Image (cartoon, rainbow, N blue to C red; front, side, top):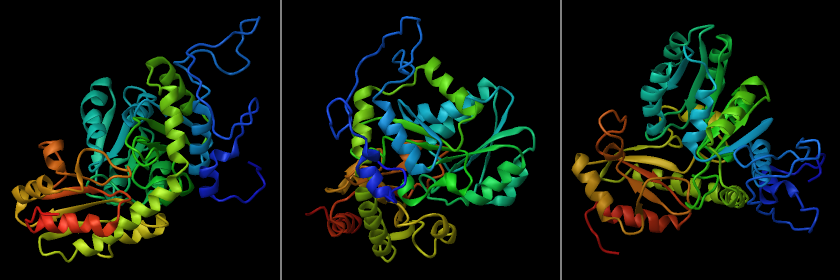
Length: 385
């Protein structure tokens, strides 16, 4: 795709940056399953590939598209979102200090509180929407990484990325942003000052609930990025070539799927906000959401496809509502074409930030009236179609 052409992100994604396979003229990038590659006569690897634990030619189109969409210098694929996120922390040294949000993906929060601490990192959890608390937690010269997730799963707390970037950089720390929920359709954290962006690519980037993958995108190709690359090679958290190909296929429809799902979520949030069996709706697109003004400033094209509702009647009513749905699927994940419902407190355990009367709704691309009707009937106690 011509560098000087003003193609918009949706066009670049749909055409996977316009790459054409030179040997065949194929407009769909191919899959290279080989785990090993031929050395040159002098034992060099001038083609750029040596062994499957390092990288694979199938990664290249997906990584290039991700870097382009996020405005980064480089991207790397991983075997999962957790593999990508932990690779960033494992590029630090024992004794380094990191600051992470109190509300974040529960598996990563648990990993930071247990394994990362045993490994030697000092970890402080703060409310990332409280900039004064964040500034107090960051230690100049010692804090090496500040991690942000916005909107934050599962209560959708919104963090001011630009403001946090300024605090982190003044202290000499890097800022990493989990952009899984917002996706590059809504938010481009690097443009707001982030040094690193993470995606659980299993979710909206792939969009079809058939690939487990993760990704990191760097604002700059520096020594920290090189350490992450070495970690991926040595620890083996790599993605299969077929999964990388499927991920690229999913990303090519990102700008079609995400606005539909986001629009559905906004419509549901507005209607559920007045439902007699819903005591509260947590969604950054609602004007009464505490982070609405920040979200409106740093997100474009909508506010994402995730919301949570607090059900009148407490935990029992919330669990019963999830049990009665017919169209919504009781399952863990988000970002797919199908809509999912989940009682997060049951999943996350005692230390969850999710109230026990809360249901997380991961909205898909179905007809929004059907989605609302199913929820309305179940909330009102009617299990009929």
